[in-house]
Each structure stands twice: as C-alpha cells, then as structure tokens.
Length: 205
Ligand SMILES: Nc1ncnc2c1ncn2[C@@H]1O[C@H](COP(=O)(O)OP(=O)(O)O)[C@@H](O)[C@H]1O
Ligand SMILES: Cc1cn([C@H]2C[C@H](O)[C@@H](COP(=O)(O)OP(=O)(O)O)O2)c(=O)[nH]c1=O
Image 1 (cartoon, helix red, strand yellow):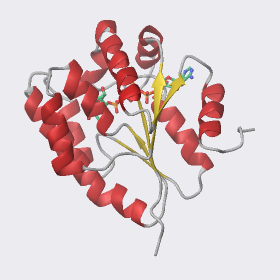
Image 2 (cartoon, rainbow, N blue to C red; image 1 turned 30 degrees about the vertical axis):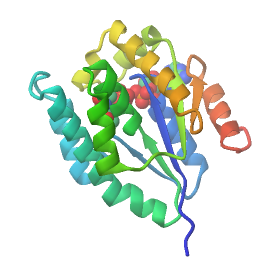
Image 3 (cartoon, rainbow, N blue to C red; image 1 turned 45 degrees about the horizontal axis):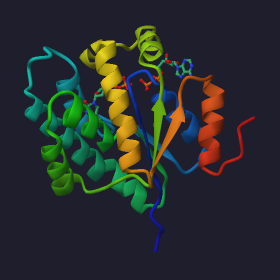
Image 4 (cartoon, rainbow, N blue to C red; image 1 turned 90 degrees about the horizontal axis):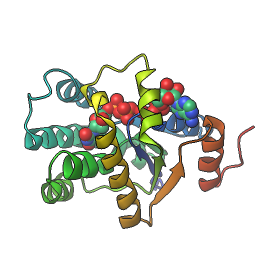
C-alpha cells in the first residue's frame, strides 16, 4: 500500500512571502505538488474569483465562510487528497488556518461556525504549517509593489494586518504540535534556509 504523503501549509499575512517560500520548498522536493487557496482546483478557482473580486459588500461574512469552505472541499476532493493518497508531498499556500483567522476572528466572530464547518466538511489538518511572521508595514509595501494586486483583500489597512498577525501567532501557540513560526523580516534565502532546516533538508546552495 502507498504510504500517504505529507501535507505542508504556509500561512501568514498578505505579502509576508508565503507564495515565494512555498515555491522554493516545492522546487527542492521532487515529489511535491504546489497549490494554493482559495483555489487549487478548477472549481475552487472559480469560487476564488467570486469571493475575491467585485463589490466588497456582495457577500455577508457567513456566505463568505461558506464560499471559502466550498472551495476548500473541492480542492481537497480533486487535488489534495488524491495527491496525498498517491504518496506525494502537498505544499499549499494558505489552508484552513486562514479561515480560522480571517473569517473566524478578524472579520467577525464566526469561530464556532468555522470550527463546526471544518469538522463537518473538511476534517483534514496539515502535518506541518509554516507561519511566516512579519511586520505588516513592510509586508504592505511589498504587496503594493506586486503586479497582481487585483484582490480587494489587498486593501486591508495596517490595523487589520496587525490583527491578522496576532491571530496567526495565537494560532501557532494553539496548534504548537504542527506550527512553526518563521521570521519573515529577512532575505528570501535566509528564510528558505530556515525552512529547509525545519524540513530536515540541507541548507540550499
Ligand atoms: N524575504 C523577502 N524579502 C523581500 N521581498 C520579498 C521577500 N519574500 C517575498 N518578497 C516579495 O514580496 C512580494 C510578496 O511576496 P509573496 O511571496 O507573494 O507573499 P504572499 O504570498 O505572502 O502574499 C513579492 O513581490 C515577492 O517577490
Ligand atoms: C484561504 C483563505 C483566504 N482568505 C483571504 C486571505 C487573503 O487576503 C485572500 C487571498 O488572497 P491571496 O492573494 O491568495 O493572498 P496573499 O495576498 O496572501 O498572496 O483571501 C480568507 O479570508 N479566508 C480563507 O480561508
């Protein structure tokens, strides 16, 4: 029987360097698939477009939670679970911890609903989660420099980013068995070396 693969997620505030580090780690692991949320499967990418673009007032917090959960369910069924079952490593840029923080704590107080929906519809936790922690002001200026800043979620102010950051740090304490906090206020290569060490890989270069 095939041994199930490892499920690794990256979390943190917008612009903290998650996508960059997820990509660098995937490049070092020949069996890995690199994916992201919201999205990662054709259906979930369609839901991503619905939830991340357009009028910010279009969805209530509750509907938004259902949309993120629906996207995650499709992503799990179509992409994550089959890859894990085939023994591959899955590296995902954001996962359920983002819902716990964004929908559960910072844009309302839906944490109980978030946890119930997760239990009923998702049920899977990562084996390892890297929380890239960094100064929101620096992350915001990185984000503003990005060519793809299409999403309304990019418009958060510093106060919101600080709340999200604090939420992720609290979550890292709650799920300390699988979460590793990584200092993101450093050069790309230094962060990648830190993550490689945590993964038991030799430092790059
Ligand atoms: N350690 C770093 N130092 C400086 N710039 C970075 C670093 N990591 C990422 N960047 C740049 O910052 C922007 C946001 O990075 P990205 O990996 O897309 O973050 P996230 O996925 O967390 O939003 C990109 O333009 C990226 O090239
Ligand atoms: C996965 C997920 C993301 N989000 C938010 C976080 C981000 O602001 C946005 C995803 O945008 P994205 O551009 O992928 O994130 P980043 O800026 O970190 O590269 O959606 C939620 O609110 N809930 C969720 O469950």
